[in-house]
Structures are given as structure tokens and as C-alpha cells.
Image (tube, rainbow, N blue to C red; front, side, top):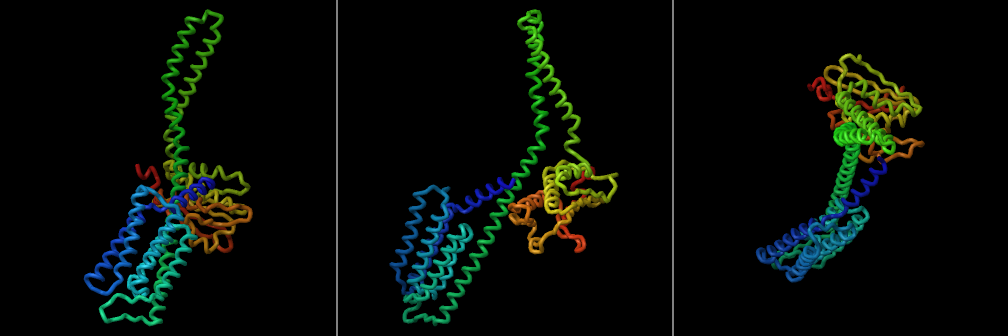
Length: 436
């Protein structure tokens, strides 16, 4: 599971960092349209003095590059991180060039320098994004020294003193840094969550596949019944015709006996499947707990099952692969970190069903306890364990919550150290007797 999850995570992260070219192209067309409209309004409607030709050249360059990319590559083409970095860097330089000749930091649109940086931090590896934000910092610094005035009414010059320039620079720089960090964190958490959920689906599919093998065996037995019956009939005919021939008598007898043996085996399979169908679909709470605990009793840790409520009237549960795997993972985690004993307590009443898993290990660290259940967070560390990706507990939590459970993670009392996990369901939701 660890190797498959690691491979899945690496593959998904690589794919998620490849931006679709069409996305950048559309954003660029929006930028071209916005820049062209702004220049037109300033030059022809407001009639402010403006270096119109250089502005048009810069906008035309961006439009030409965009048109070239549209014609050169298909809409589904995805860019590798270096190519995305180059395009975002080009957007940054074009925008800064336009701002430089129209007032520098005095231009109210100078805040747009943040846009390529935010896009990079939301979609690209951190090394490319850090390089781009450093380039953006240099660019806005150069804008502070622009010799070109802000386009304004004839005979009026907008003068911004050095303190105001510094304030604008600080506001743009802080906005860029904060927005970039926020975009990066949100993007990483979304990517981790998507990868972890993909791993969860992989585990659930495997558990369902294993639970479906019995049905597959019954179906195979049913399908094989007809050809085996034909073989048996042919074998009887051959025995009647060739039974007195010493050359074929033993072979024909063997063929018939083996065909009859195959039919008996298939008959037992189909009979067993029919008799135990309900047993395979439903099981009592005590049976489920014994089935979950059994694989973990051979590791030198005393595994104790405490039933606080008598078995009379205990819930009857559907054989849910997600519940079986989730509880098994929690028990396995407790066994891994226990010193001597793991205690599983089961209690139910007319309203709820609760399962509490406790171990006598070191418990959860306070900083981990606040983030427990997040993907790729290793819950506890031990010197004699290698430690995984931290996906196991997330998968268990996700599968159990899908079944309607509420999970509570914590530590035991100070005099009895160790971890405690409580899983609780509304009985109406999980008890087959209550839902029938």
C-alpha cells in the first residue's frame, strides 16, 4: 500500500503541475483585451497624453505570441513547469514594460504585477515560483525609478514623493507575498487531498474486489456446469461404446470419473454459496470484531476485547469493506505503537454504537493531535518503525466517515498514558435489523 500510494502521489503531483496551455492563452487574451481597452480609454476618451505607439507595440507583442501558441499547439497541450515559468515570466516583463512607460508605481494598475506570481504559486513547483517572485520584486523596484509621468490632464503632473513611492512598493510586495503563500498552501492542500482520496478509492476497490471473489466463484461454477454436463454425457457414451476395448477402457473410465468429480466440486461450491449468502452479507457486531482483531493477535501485543453490553440484541451489520478496513487500520496502528496491551471496547444502546480503541503507548503528540486525520501527516513516530506517508489514518478516517461514523482522537488519562480513538455511529444507520 505504501509503495502504491507513493507512486500514485508522485504521478498525480507531476500531472497537477502541468498547466493546460489553453488556460494560459485565455487568460492572456483577457489581459490583451483589458490592456487595449485601458489604453484606448486613456488616449481617446480621457485624452491624456500617452506614449501610444510603445503601448500598442507591447500589447501587440503579447497578442502575437498568444496567437502563435494557439495555432502552434492543440487546445489539450499541457506545459511542463519550465515552459510555464517562461510564459509567466514573459507576461510579467510585458506588464512591467507597459507600467514603466505609463508612470511606474504611480500607475493604479501596478498591483497587477501580482497576477503572474499568484498563478505560478498556485500551479507550479516552488523553485520556479520563488524565482518568479524574486524577478517580480526586482521589477517593481525598477518601476519606482520610472522617468515617465503618469498620463494626466495637460499641464498637470502627478508628483509622488519618495515616502509614497515606498508605501506603494511595500503594499504591492506584501500583497504579492501574502497572496502567493496563500495560493501555494491552498493548492498543495488540495493536491494532497485529491491524491489521498485517490489512494482511498484504490484501497476501497481492493477490499470490494476481495469481498466479491465468493460471488465470482459461484458464477464460475454456474457457467462451468453446462459444459461439464456435456462432457459427462459424452464420456458415458464413449464408455458404453469403448468399454470392452482394452486399449481405451481405462482412459474412458478415468475421463468419466474425473468429469463427475468436477461436477461434484462445482455442486458443493454453488450449494455453499447459496447457504452462506446471508452469512457473507451480514454479520453480528461480535463476529465482525473478532474478524477484525484476529489478524493482529500474533505480534506479541495482548489484544483485549471488552464488551460493555451483553450480546443479546447486538446489532447485525452489513459486511462493509470500508468499515472492515478502517477499523482494522486503527487496530493495526494501536498494535504498532502499544507497549504491551491494546484494548478494544464495544458498547451499544438503542441509539448509538461505539467502538473505542486504546493502547498503552506514548500517545499522540500535542502538535499532531490538532492535525490528525489530514493526508500525509505521520501520526506518531517510533524509533523502531520506519514511518510511512501518513496516509493510513486518513484512509481509515475517510472510509469510516463515509459509513456515517464520527471519529474522536485523543490521549488517555495522565496516569495511564496511551492513545484513544472512539468511533461512533447512529445505530439506525448501521444496524441492519433497524433498517429492515
